[in-house]
Length: 160
Image 1 (cartoon, rainbow, N blue to C red):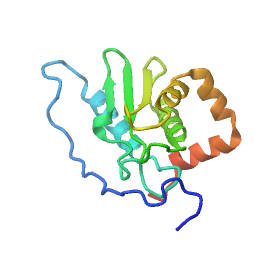
Image 2: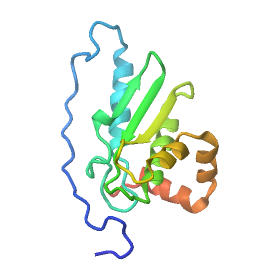
Image 3: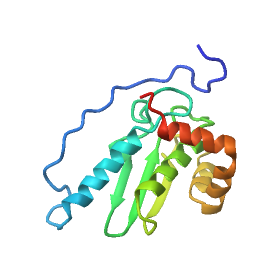
């Protein structure tokens, strides 16, 4: 067992098998199939982000799921709600920063992105949400070289 981990024994779930969807869940609205593909690809990319403490993806730890990612192309909004593995998770802001950086890389800047911890899932929910949705605080956090290195390791690790 590694010393210093906040959650030394997380529950690990199997990765969900994904099947391409053939029907539009929004009904008769005409949506470009490439847009749907891009959104689904984004979801897969986000689910494969590695946890900062463990060699598992956010999906495997049930921190993030398909259902917790909402994309509204018409309004240009993305909402991600994630659930830390424990209430006092010190890595919640790092996870949120990883999500924000990846979304910034994958989506045009006109999209409004909201990243939040699931209600009641973190002891300091309000301040985590405030940091993750404040451009200046996010920029300042990412200027810290150690924090930026941790974010990059989570995003670009090939260990999964």
